[in-house]
Image 1 (cartoon, rainbow, N blue to C red):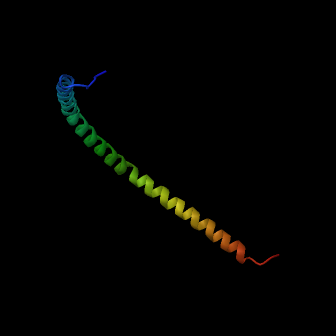
Image 2 (cartoon, rainbow, N blue to C red):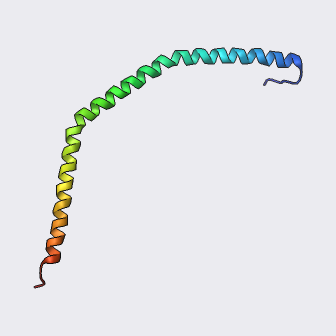
Image 3 (cartoon, helix red, strand yellow):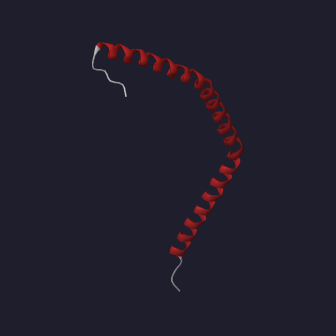
Length: 84
């Protein structure tokens, strides 16, 4: 563990901190293009997924809406039907 209790330890800690910052910058520079490429690929994949899935999503919504309309109409029909 680093101790900073005097000027010499302070200067040593400053040198270590500069080294750590330098390594972290190199890490960031290494991963930055990979993250950019991954982000671009993710956008392309999800965009393509929407294109392929879109018609099916629309079909599902249409069928669900028609089924809901049927149920609503059946409830109305039953509620208007005179008792036997």
